[in-house]
Image (cartoon, rainbow over all chains, first blue to last red; front, side):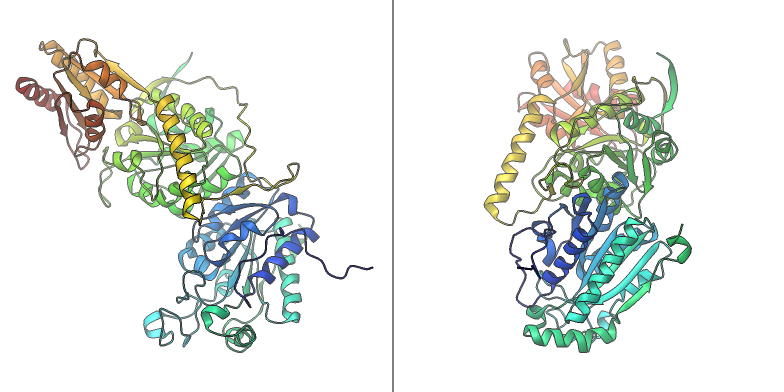
Length: 251
Length: 353
């Protein structure tokens, strides 16, 4: 019998703790599959965030470090400077990366740190109880914006991928979504490219992944996928915002 | 052995290199800046990495990553910068990662000033960050001792898988003294770190560096295991120096730069016929109580002198166990007590006792 689909050995056998309809599991699998396909799992060190993916070290089948909130890019920098031939990635949510950890991600990119960041944007704080994140959409209701986010009080959604793409040291910056089979396939291609950029030593790479939070959005899983498509993507357009320059690729 | 003239801040760096440290992550702050200046030049010469972080918060987390990857790694800062590092220090202690943190203390609280002080004693020896944890804390009082203690600091960090703080002050960092450099072959055989996160290749099993334990009972178990480790430090690592303690009836107690002032005061008091002696703790945690016990039979009073408002005096009172009066003299805000001031206060204490 031909095997058409199986669990990747890039993940451990531990069942995910994520809520029904949350797309963290898909993103974990894509990253794990890429690490296996690039044949780098055994030389990879991952850095976990604070937030819903805080237990990521239970799932990725490689060496893992748990970092403090927002500090994963600094921790990854320490690892990569000691072990420049290893593959180092951070996995961070929007509360972790776009609020408390903004300085760390901006400067890791500015240094051209040869790490890969998987940035999961679900427009809300998940584990902490559905509060507003920097990425929360205008008008979106959260536990700390009960009448909807208003720019006058709470400012505007932060477009992380676009912001980081302006930084010289960032070699590859892209945004994908995992709301449809087509987008999942595209997301994997992009995540693979981000790791290839690290392996080629070209600099910092980041993939922003638009993700769902049915629990804190107060929606069913199918409604959440539709909301991502209809509300999030117009604010956070998909695409590659920064790709390696040709001369670097052939250097 | 050749003697060279060296600045205290440079000695922290050279001592670290001779101890096998090859990674430094830090953020500039006065009065410790010559330390990063020195390492920025020196580390590349020995194949190491110097990296100026965007903040103290990032610097200590880079230390966390490098320590997790199995390296001998250090950072340095001064009081307000150390406050910013406390989150990371708590994580390092929780994840049991070895590293060395140098604090060249200045006046506080807040922005304070850049003059020498010892007012971070509580922060250094009582925790500093959140949670039940301790740092091994070493307090050199000369440039030579800085060189010697940096080697010990890295060895203790590895021995206990714990951060070690080396506590200096603005005077110690800025002063120049002739020193003998410790032997250095360039190649050091460092202890293996099978727990480090270096990739699973050749190992098979995964290594996880973590300080998260959701179940209270599980975290309590971890904290009790850490407590047993701190108990072992208390049994094995107490260090101190005494001066004329054997016959002392008035015992001065001081650490770091202040111990140099206190030692001169002891000599002056002896000249005036007062049987003074000195206890100088070298480890501030664990705090050395043995020399206090040795002094009880003759001592009529203890006098703690510090460049703060009386922080170590609390540990001295614990060590003295109420058997003898403990007095305190200190200046704060970056003011360094003079020998004359200490002698004058000591005589007051002596005539009352």
